[in-house]
Every structure is written in C-alpha cells, then in structure tokens.
Amino acid sequence: MHANLRAVTPPATSDATTPQFSFSAGPAALPAPVRERIRDEFGDFAGTGRPVLELPFSGPEFRDVMARAERDLRTLLTVPDDHAVLFLQGGASAQFGLLPQNLGTGPAGADYVDTGYWSRKTIAEAARVTHVGVAATGADHIPDATTWRVRPDAAYLHVTTNETADGLAFHDTPVHPSHVPLVADMSSDFLTRPIDVADWGVIYASAQKNIGPAGLTVVLVRRDLLGRAHRSVPAVFDYTRQDEAGSRFNTPPTFAIYVAGLVLEWLLSHGGVAAMALANRRKSAAVYDAIDDSDGFYRCGIRADCRSHVNVCFRIADEALTDRFVASAREEGLLDLAGHSRVGGLRASLYNAVPEAAATALAAFMRGFQRRHG
Ligand SMILES: Cc1ncc(COP(=O)(O)O)c(C=O)c1O
Image (cartoon, rainbow, N blue to C red):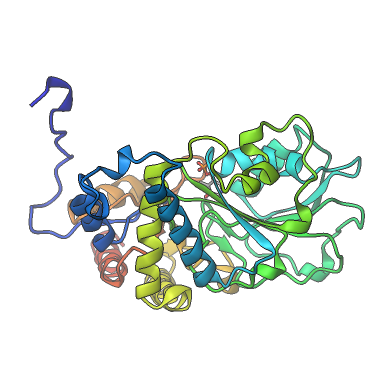
C-alpha cells in the first residue's frame, strides 16, 4: 500500500459486532444502501467502465446524473416550475452573504428572525453587505408570527427553519402579516418533512445532513426573484447565471451531486418526505421521552411544540457528567453525541438516514446512564 494511503484505525468502540450509529449533525449518516451503491459503482458508473469521479461534467452521462437528481428533487418536494433548482458550492455559510447580494437588497435591506445560533450566524454575514432588521427573537420557542415586525419595504424575510445547534424548529410555514418574500435556511430539515415550496421565495440547504456529501449546496429560487443580483456577485454564485447554465457555469461538485442523486432515489423508494417526517417524529419522540421521563436528570430547554424532530438538544442537570455520557455512549457504538462546540450539552441528530433502531438504542442507553449516575 502507498505510504500516504495507510488505513486509518478508527478509535476503539466496544467490539466489532456492536452496531455503530452516527448521531453526527453533519457530515451525517448516509443511507446504508447508498453507501453500497457508491462502493459498487465507484469504478464503473452505469456500465460505462469509467469511475463517476472521472466523468466530464458537460458530457452526456453526467448531464443525465444532474437531470435525474433535479427531477427526483422536484418530485419529492413537488417543486413548482416557477422555482429554479440550483446545485452550488460553498455551503449554506456562503449563502448567508450571497443571498442579500442575489436578491438585490435596497436601502431598507432585509428582515431576519433570530431563533438561535445559525440565525445569528446568517444575520452577522448579511449585515456585512446590507441593512438587517430583526423582526423577532426567540430562544426556547418560535414567537407568534403575527407579532413579527416585518417592514413592508424589506427585500425579504429570513428564517432558519431548524436550528441545528439549539434544537428549535418551525413545523409549519410561518404566516406573517406582510407580503415580503419568505426565505429559509433549511440546511438541517430539508427533505425531512413535506413543505409547500410555493410559500418560499428562496430555500437553501447544505447537503451534508439530508441530501448527500459536504460540498454541495442546493438552492431553490422563485424565478421572479432572479435578475436582481448586485454587479459584485461572482458569476459562479449568481443565481441567474447558474440557472441559465443549468448549474454548470463552472465545474460543479460532481461526486457530491452523484451521491445526492442516489440519496434522492433512496428517498423516493422509501415513501418520500412524508414517510421521513413520520419516522423522524417517532425517532425524536423516543429520545424526548427519555428526557421527559428522567425527573430532571436530563433537560431540554425548548418548548414542546417547537422541538426539532431531527436535532434533539439536551443537557444533563449535572453538567460534569456530560463528557462521561459521550464517552460511554461511544463505547456502546452511539457516536457523535456532543452538542455543538459553541452551545455545549448533548445533541442527537436523527436525520433521515439514521435508523429507528439508533434512536431506540440511544433512549435505552440514556435510561441506563441515568440509573447508573442519577
Ligand atoms: C442551519 C444551518 N445553517 C448553516 C450551516 C452551515 O453549513 P456549512 O458548514 O455547509 O456552510 C449549518 C451547519 O451545520 C446549519 O446547521
């Protein structure tokens, strides 16, 4: 074996027969059948005898991969024709600053709802390029949308529909008293539940939670919002130019799009987003029940009706036990349960590809940990 390609030994877990479940917030678990397809097709894509990694991005085979990914995404979310689907790079973080530049914010700028860590990140980036108004703030719940202070001349109203680091989620489209276009960072709940895309001017999402590998960012943009970009927006990040180019203005992240296509196929063959929503609700309920039944040993600070179904964030009342919880869980094959580095505590990410057995195993572990340390 080449010296630089030595196998990396993973940190030890209990034993080789213990199933390992990843609760990582991203890059997150991929569906097992998708991992197998990648392995099987790696050197020979669809009988071409060529690795998918080596397919020219403008050749017929890769164009077909992109077309199928877009078609399946449109089917899964019933994306209307008047929304463009873009496959971009740079992560959701790039969109934080690109969004106001693409939507051509005027002197009034745009309004944002602040519901947690990721809202504040996007507000900070947007504030570098435009005026930002904060329409509402919520920490443990989503404030009633009828009370939001949305300015009629704001270019758009931005929400983060699932606060990945805090575990706070919108379960429905907010109905707010204004006509400005709604925009969402759906990085962690995209494809985890049915949505009405027509409600949204722009939806953007990093891929590495529910769509596929890091490196791909999906943007859905209503076509009447195209053509407004500031002149300073680089062409590769200009929604209009990328729409005209079929997301091939430059080399797209081909491998990430190929894997995303496999995930979308998997979703379609497993009941689509409605089935995912039900499963995510059951998985998160198993973990929330372990928290709520714990007599305060575990605590979740989010109001019950606003709790995320895909990122369960909680703490142990005795915070000194947090590291031991993470380490003991790891020994039992329950991986990546530490909370976001800036938020602390614990977090179980239960995205679409996380099996129900993982949530059940985690809930059982939590009850056992409480018995041992409570
Ligand atoms: C809601 C949300 N927005 C944005 C991001 C940033 O994504 P990226 O690292 O791909 O830029 C994340 C990452 O976890 C997220 O959860």
